[in-house]
Image 1: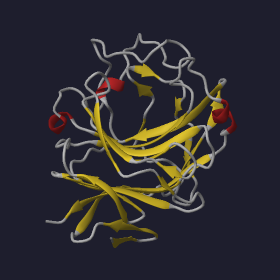
Image 2: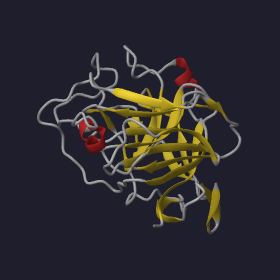
Image 3: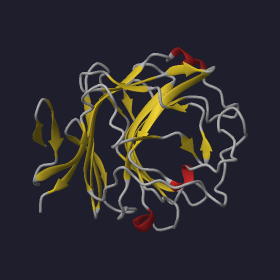
Length: 280
């Protein structure tokens, strides 16, 4: 890997053998989140989710976005940021909240909710996040890409892929990388690479993905951690998500687990998110 220096910030670690230019980034400078770059993800599968809030991420003044678990109105909540929207997430105005009401994930119904213009979408390139993982059980963190129209057709090339670059479901444990396609119903398929990796909790770690027309290569701290160069590859622009979620609300009773309640106040810290294009 080669270093790409960013003034007054940690350097990026980029794949060798190519020249790179920075095309989008958030260094999380200042004290206010840049809402020209991000939206809050508040909905899932056509319903407003009571635990996806806007209060669980703040800038600390030291170029970090700090995500926390917090309690509000008796629920255990966290925050998700995204640079675009998936059309299946948008609720109709009359749809109830997805949380403690309802028994299952709602299906897509007509008409769908209001669509949104993305803040940033990108096709191909190197996508990178530097972060410190959460230290307590009961919630998880992720850095990923999603297509705005995943599952709209059976062809991932034209409808896109979900790329899970980093997912940490337990303290210090980074899950293997997964690409999902075909939507989230009966046509869902996935391919994965590598194995779970253990990393230290007190240090920043860098997670990256090289996306080319041929496939995907994943990196942890500058070292290659698997690749999927056959099978499903998206050839359409996709958006970035940094997400956290507490455990329990996807279970039958839609309640936070005891571990989630004990995680209130725990932190997931993001130093930067950057996107690079290869210089041709």
